[in-house]
Image 1 (cartoon, helix red, strand yellow):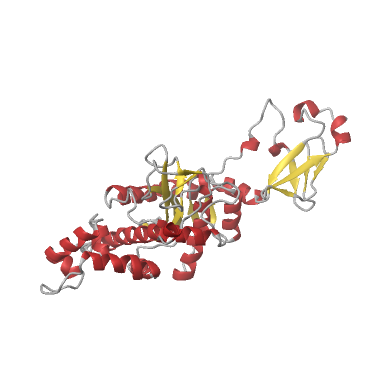
Image 2 (cartoon, one colour):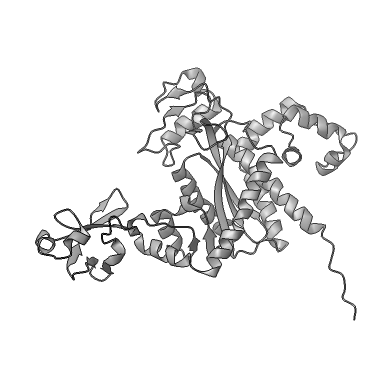
Length: 389
């Protein structure tokens, strides 16, 4: 019945029970005879928000449909695409609490969405970034992120993360996260690992937008032999006032040092700053006597910053010149059409369930029916006509 509802944009559980009771096609799909009773909407809701939410049954249904798509030859496994789209949470943007701290009452802690949030704060996968506290929290759905990326200037939202096979736009995995870039990047790693574990699928390349071009993400992909088809723009390669940029310095991997245009060495202590950057510094005595200093730096010595995953960044930038990358950039648009279909055809504009588990349920159901539609279209496709001499 839930699949019927999400396929035909029937979001109300009361209305869904009425529709199934009257529609013979819905009854047939749900294996209900003409005299079989349709569940009461209150009983339906209790089971959906109780047994269904506490189990992984919707994940199993989704993965069962993905396996059927694979058996039908709809999944190529050659190239995947990843992206996220913001869905408004069931939380008023006009009722928010500024800051990241709330003293919850016993009555509030009894609600599922709030209890999930409080429990998650003590786990390894906290819903907020420890280094950057949220500007506002919803008192009804605190896991939802305060964001400016939605259909309003500001609102509370969740990110619908899709990992698709680009051959036929089959969704191979889906994940719900609060609308934060860092959480969306983390979800990509989760989805790729889960897809490989559940379906033995590992793409040769992954297409994504610039948000997935962090050094950490690129290094993670390259270490797993997955080519990142992601735009990477290195701002350090842009010359300022005609001075030397990092590309003018030769990096020697064996010695872990840079050689400047005048042949002097820039060395590092090996300290990683902010978890991502290594700094290389020239000797002041070398710079003081160097005739090229006016073209190099205004400081007492030249400094160069290098990402800890710079090799992966350089490798990804080289891929941007290949034909395979250009094809991926074109095929990646299929994931945008899936988001448009989810919002405009399946009415996934605002969530009806609260909490991260509620968002997961709604996203899994939406992704399942989108795959079912493509599977059904493939199943009814007529066989090719025979060729006559």
